[in-house]
Image (cartoon, rainbow, N blue to C red; front, side, top):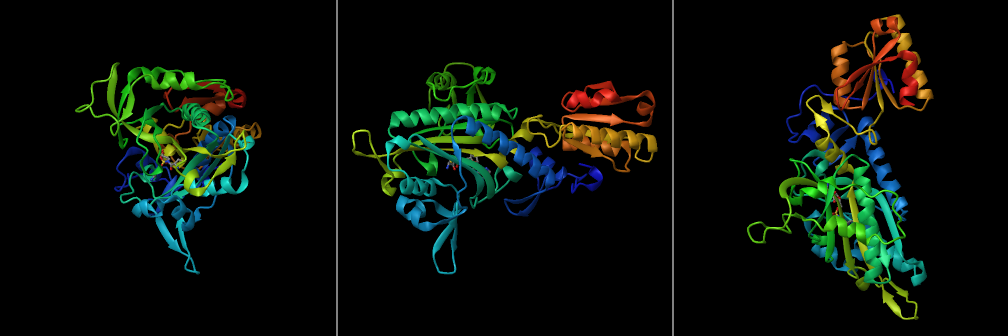
Length: 435
Ligand SMILES: Nc1ncnc2c1ncn2[C@@H]1O[C@H](COS(=O)(=O)NC(=O)[C@@H](N)CS)[C@@H](O)[C@H]1O
């Protein structure tokens, strides 16, 4: 993409309404613009990263055996009356009346909808286990939306729902998601620690939140330092027994401050630190909480009717962009991990008015694109300083800097955005370096 053509309204000034760094940088880098409180427009740069994050979530869900669906954002209130949550859910639920006077709502979550899909289409235990997921927009009328996409009212969530014949089988589904979550966040360069958590309006008695440690996090947490060093599971056999991995990750102390109070509870063993964290995922087992009132049953192996056991598993996809920036930035701006970066290379033409330099850069841009390298090409007629500042703000992992002197010497300068390390490369070696 050429910066001269990019719809990228960067800001020099820090917007006053932004209180945390990720919110400030997402506004300054032209990634989002607020539409209303807690509701955002996703501009080209921001949307590009959102889809990269979404894709990693999707890949790990597919690898774990979940199947992607798309459920409606607007739901009928009738299902929520069946589950008994219509009144309990409170003011966070955006309630709507359609032209025929029917009670509808903008979905804050989808347990009822997915249970309705299951009960209408599955009769036999032979179709279990089932695990359906979607990546879709949710609406929760938060009383105090803040911190940009971190606590929005309309936000993008990946939500899964699992269906099993028994609590034991449901535990296996839970474990598959637990491991998939460890892998998902690690692929985005995040250390997300699974912690015992409250179940809140979703319900159930088994739940873990996945928390990324960050000083601006809204959650207070207590975590054993050893958890931060643990290697992430690789080459996972999702049909195998994952309990040992889950046991390993839950044997050390980690709890949100809702579950552990240092004043009341005894001091846990280990090198436990108190920190702030961002909840990027939350998984629940809640048995028959929805399947019983909604009649989601299957015929069991011995012909009897069995109410299925369920769990639900959420990831805050849009929140993750904020979390990644909180975990990876510096004074100059965002530092995107390569796995979610909007572009891999930021190509900077230091002298747009110099014909030889511009031709070299244009040729390099074409060659990198032809090799499948995602390039953001600063071809603007701007001062070098402004170009460096913008590319550092946008946060692409690698900068390829070409000026008239470099062209004369046949070299480009390469800058690693994360380390600041600079090196030189012959111009004809740049494509192979990044392809
Ligand atoms: N207001 C919000 N803004 C941005 N992300 C949010 C917001 N509320 C929740 N999330 C994200 O969505 C994830 C899942 O939300 S949740 O309420 O914990 N869980 C559920 O909704 C379950 N139905 C899982 S499918 C959270 O872990 C958090 O990362």
